[in-house]
Image 1: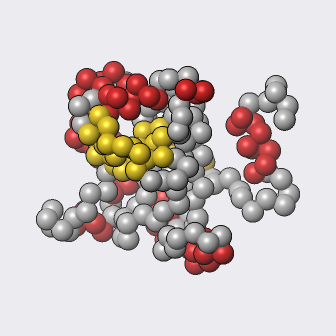
Image 2: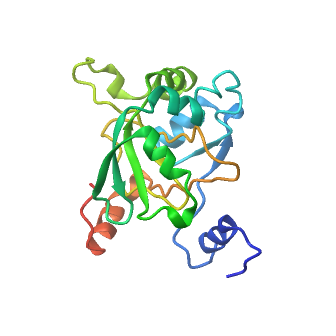
Length: 214
């Protein structure tokens, strides 16, 4: 491994190899977002799309999505923390305690832990719903009675090299993943399957002796 190359550069090289089955999803700046293109590309064709700089204009909201705000306003909330290698529950912890763990040096974070499907702070949910309202125009779940509507907002908290297992978004909903806070230089990789390849992905999962995700 070339020590001069960043981790992201090494990952890019693997993805861009000629024999790779992976390809980069199309990318668009959020300021150039076009609803008709989104409806055709994502809704009708079922292909993934990356929108860059979604939160760059959220100047007033930056503090609310910050680390200290989360600790002050959500720190006492209990969450289920899982072992990222076995996906079994490791412990029930306060958000503030888990944040302390995430700030430890990498060599001291053992076992590797992650928290996903964490209850989203109401303040975050309201902001995202307002800022990303145009994405919900085709989401049939929002038309259900509130008593029947599943909760589709959740958060993931993790350190570097943590990951979430393969899953399928709730039927009838649009899966939008938004990074609202990270350390400088951090990045997130999402491996997304288009709608037309859904069955192929399910077969691949089964061949690897994994629990079916469909």
